[in-house]
Length: 306
Image 1: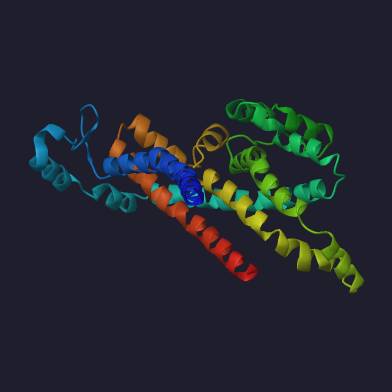
Image 2: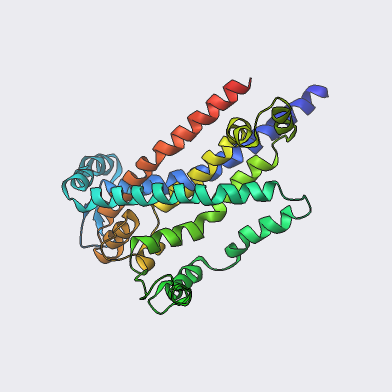
């Protein structure tokens, strides 16, 4: 009887663990394999707009012909045309600088929320996530009105006599960074708050008793303990920003071309699905680097805690 109960619990535990893997296989691995296959195809004026297309009725011979027709020419073209490397580099530049600004803004905000009275913390966290209740596209469009030459920002700067003439904020890299920081700030604040909120404050008291100044205690105690939140927040911001399309397209200028815009252009404007798929697969491979680095940091942290 006891063995039967243990066997049922074992199968239940395995089923619970199996569900996330099935979810990932269905909604991540399968779409990725489809995109990978398209990236190895060639553009064609047909429906779908690429060849080869697998025909199951052709049997084994058709399968062999299908794999023989696949090619990596699209990936070779990504390195031969300057547009694609420039787009990748610009995306990494924007993502890195935006993430750095988000960390500089989000850390003090998360620290202040974590050190506020317990009864106020849920309210402050709610205020951080409140912008999520509005459509992302509407929020970006709102910044267009704020940043235009006769918009709210220039009006305030002129009234305060900070500038003499309206500043051209819109269609610039500055507008892109403003939009990125505003849109992704909750993704930085929430992991940082989660790490700071559970920190044992008695450690700071012990540091003070040992004669450690408050500023030095922050660098020696608070910051190291919050590094998992820092890494998680940076990862949650860097990865989606690198592939962002809406913000650079609406707030940026024609000279600022990120890889998300290039991907959209190839897919919808040029109808070149194989090249667009190759861009997407290469972007995924590029973004795997920080993800693997974060995973390595987590493993080292777990090993150090044992």
